[in-house]
Image (cartoon, rainbow, N blue to C red; front, side, top):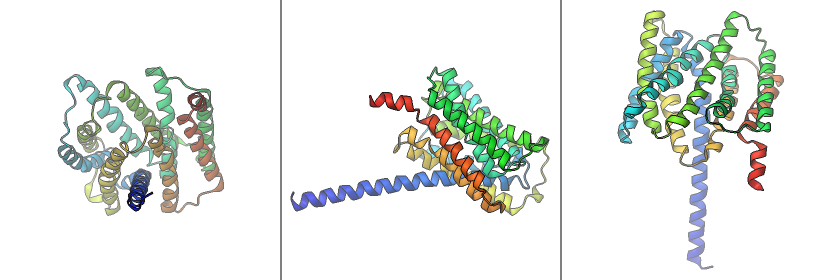
Length: 314
């Protein structure tokens, strides 16, 4: 092999290594930004009611999404024949679920909220079977059973007695996960032709305005009582978690397969549990670590059905 060929091969290897390192860093950024979302919500609702908090977050994010759409020269409006779908996305992906998440975090820890929301891929699997007629494998059913069994044990080990407030907090978070899962599946069925930027920009703006106005009407927030910590959390949620996380995730879609990228939903709860426990001054018990690992492993099985993988190999 000539010297020039060796140099060219080394340069190619270095470029591949650099591209791989950049992809890993981007993946870590998404996991970290989405993992800290739950703590951000927890801090925001300390002095901002849930409707108002969700609305302010989206109103902060909307101008940057609008700029991003303009830079990418993407349309803001949905196609005329998909206006009903625009209403569906605005309500079932942004408006109602984020109010429920904000409400839930008033009564449940940020780490447990993330673990509850990590059930979403399971609901995606169920809705995919119902609406898209996709097959559910036995190993996936086993994974669902393992995941929800572990979730029950986590709730018990965390000392949640599920009084009135805690019970409705848990239900609100699970309902948000169900609505997000339904929206993902209907999007795959009806909205695959709509660009990701168009999908997010105007719904975030409309949802933010609706939630904020509803908050003014029903919650009558006193803005002078909002602490600097809550304002900081809202700007973090709007600018970093929403816009920053979205942009990096959008870039990763071009670098990774959807299956590998979907493991973001399995990994970010780990960040949320660790960061939430550190902030709230609660030690991470051995039981919580074990049950969390089993829960996430169970939900990971639902993404990689053994039977399907064996069929492909054969």
